[in-house]
Image (tube, rainbow, N blue to C red):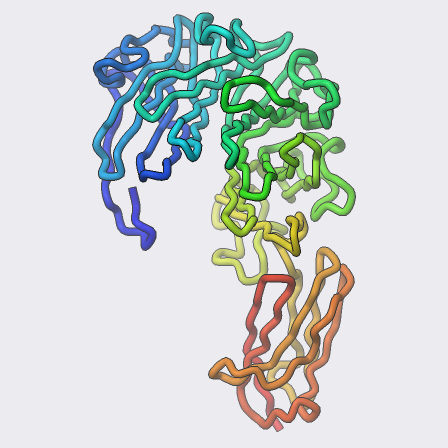
Amino acid sequence: MFSSTGSLSWSIYYGGSGNDEGRGVSTDNSGNVYITGWTNSSDGIATSGAYQTSYGGGAGGNGVGDAFLAKFSNTGSLSWATYFGGDEPDAGEGVSTDASGNVYITGYTESSGLSTPGAYQACCSGAFLAKFSSSGTITWATYFGGNYSSQDFGFGVSTDASGNVYITGDTHSSSGIATSSAYQSSYAGTTSKGNAFLAKFSSKGSLSWATYYGGNGDDFGFGVSADNFGNVYITGMTGSSSGIATTGAYQASLQGTQDAFLAEFSSSGSLTWATYYGNVGEQATGVATDGSGNVYMTGLTYSNSGIATTDAYQTFNAGQGDVLLIKFHSHNSGISPAMNTVIYGLNIYPNPFSNKTTIDFTLPQTSHVKISVMDMSGKVLYVSADKMLNLGQNELEINASEAGLASGTYFVNIAINDQVINRKIIEVR
């Protein structure tokens, strides 16, 4: 655990005599920490009185045995932990809490007997979703899979303010996934190339709706997050050249052999917008939202260009593959899919300049742009532009005589929607 300033508060091992891997982490409103993953350890995992105290024994060829769920206090002490699995491979991939302190895990299983009585789907393999109380008691558990359920995987889980639960993952099933009137009711993949899916459950475990998402490539949903405004976002990777981006998307077409994607759905399951994100080869593995409606996506990139914004902390790929972090931010009352990179190719020339200089940039969508000139203390001396500009290349001029600027050093403040970039300019007479 790290503090908000980056100092280490505590760090622990957790596991037994076999192999153990954590795959997901979440916190609740009381500061408790939950982790899920998989284990093939028959000891060192479950606490006394846990929902499942014994290892189910389902280690497969990749070493995956049982899923587990563990709760820690904010000081790092173990509150309780349980196995969750049968005699076939099972793995926890994602974990999330709700406002009432309940905790949900999703993942995949090949074991029978994991669902609880009255479950949405009682049998017998595929993705799963399980709800536990804050004390570790199971509330309900269900399978989620179709006619090829052995190739259906849950990877991400999230809850909304109303207690609904969303899961995303990957499916190769051509039936048994999407509900009637879903955004995408038909499977567009093949036997070897699957589609992503998004499913919404009530807090009681009933299925509200579910949809496929993808084309004829290989599509995976890895992360899901619900915001405070009734929207739900999924992210992952895609090899599909169609069935992903919506009209007017930030990136409308597949650029690499695989790209990341980000899609926004309403709470009723309709697609609001979706975009590719990539150049040579990318995948997104996680997504998060904040209280202002901003959306953050992280993952992996192999691209040397087309990823970082102009003022990014790191503007280049330093290795064969680097982590990527992208922010899409709110615009008016909604979310703009085009605003993770608000400006391209920003140039101010000449600089230093005598009387006149030009600001040249490219916008990925029509945006409100305000350009101000400030002195070194931050006082605004002159507003060069305060208007809507069209997508594409734009040029704006700063006239020092018109602005009443003497020789000296100034800042140009460029505000595009709600993102701000500052540049130093020097006027020489």
